[in-house]
Amino acid sequence: MKTLETERLILRPWSLDDADDFYEYAKHPEVGLNGGWQPHTSRDVSLKIIQYFIEENDIWAIVLKENNKVIGSLGLHLDSKRPGINVRELGFVVSAEHWGKGIATEASKRAIAHAFDDLNLDLLSTYHKSFNARAKRVIEKCGFTCEGMLRQASKRYDNLIFDAVCYSMLKSEYSNFKEKIKWMMI
Image 1 (cartoon, rainbow, N blue to C red):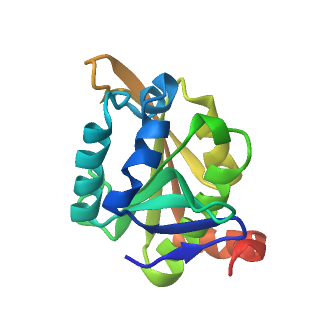
Image 2 (tube, rainbow, N blue to C red):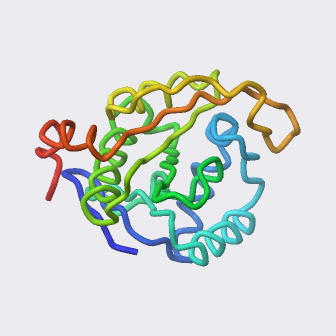
């Protein structure tokens, strides 16, 4: 997994040494709920999830350059709704302490460039729960096109079911968007 950089961030593979930082933001009650996962109840839970991240090798730790602290994660996963196609799904989470600072947008734009320029994808998808206005705003700022809503398509850890709002970006759309994000590249 290639390490990526922006002006303020490093996107790098996870390390077991990141468990304290991960637990610090993942235990916040709203952080996991927005993504559909249960807030972490212990450092050991965070450590087990990091082990999974390392095995899957498709999720970066979002690290602030100023203090080398992990403040979120970003993944380019296989899109289960588009199997067998040259597509990945963008997913991200940022600590509540850093909401509203453009971190998720900055990290996502860098991952979008990597997806099309380095991985040569044909399409990049992303989804958010219908209630997650922060994720919606990040996705819109990144230039994705809204495809619509999949009703009752996303089950949360507590078995509540939510609508999923679907977005995508074609390689040709990225070419137009690329000039807008060039300033972020290092």
